[in-house]
Amino acid sequence: MNRTRRLRVSENIRRLVRETKLSIDDFVYPIFVEEGTGVEKDIESMPGIKRYSIDRLSKELDEVVACNIPAVLLFGIPTDKDDVGAETWSDHGIIQKAVRFIKENYPSLYVITDVCFCEYTSHGHCGVLDHDDVDNDATLINIAKQAISHAKAGADMVAPSGMMDGTVETIRTNLDEAGYTKVAIMGYSVKYASAFYGPFRDAADSAPSFGDRKTYQMDPANRTEGLLRARHEDAEGVDILMVKPALSYLDLISDLKQNFDKPIACYNVSGEYAMVKAAAEKGWIDGEKVMLESLLSMKRAGADIIISYFAKEVAKLI
Image 1 (cartoon, helix red, strand yellow):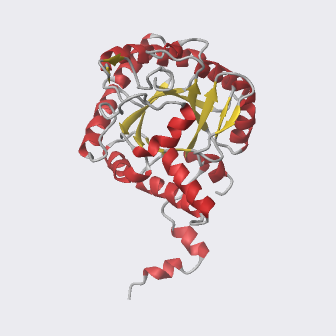
Image 2 (tube, helix red, strand yellow):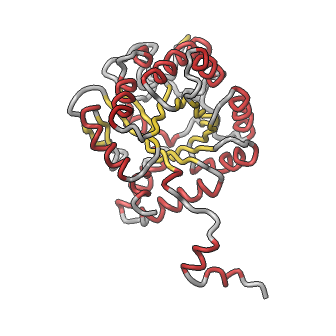
Image 3 (tube, rainbow, N blue to C red):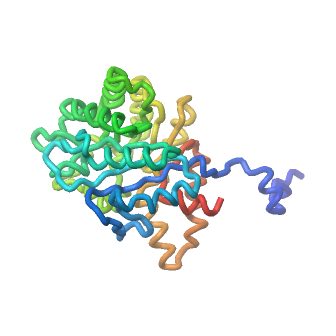
């Protein structure tokens, strides 16, 4: 009789035949950087995650380096906002200053920057408004300026998250023309209009002041559209394809892994993180085990890279 249980009888044999393994090499750690001084602010809906001003950022980065996490993804919280998010392409913007600080003091870290506008606009939407909707092509002009500004500051990779059509082609063309041919692009290729982003909007002060983002982020009901959008970004020259959120969209991670030869990333988003933390605090689940099982499912589905607020915790367990 065939008995698959023979290969489960002890931890050592389970280790030998284990198909999927997490490594710290898989992880990118998101960091929120706030304009100002002396800022080390807890994010209530994301226990263990904080907003830091640059003068306090070393506390976080020292731990990231000690954990051997290879890369960070930066999100900025500015002091001033306007209707187009002009702070995003200022040489003195919060992201630009943070990138320069990291490159000077932590040269081993690979630095990825979020390229978007929702944290910087007075209305909280991801671009230039035209009659209460985001104007795709007008926003592309500003996206190019933002990406070049990040590259000039020293970013290794830019990650445009606003879901404007043509973003990757616009950024790649402008980066190359400006001489930043080595700066890579991680596309938010398959990003859904998800309810799992709530805690992030608290963290980044990025909630829209009216309406929602359903005209530019994808409908959670659509799977084929995700492949279509990934094909567009692949053709435009993206270096890494991403699925966001991760846990409720494992089918999309698998689809991209099976259909593309480029690395596949996923974003283990704030709501996924917060749910585990809240249930663990209540004693309803074993937080560490659920965390690891959830992340393992993303890797098993095909993710080569996992962006996760759990990264530091994982580093201490694997």
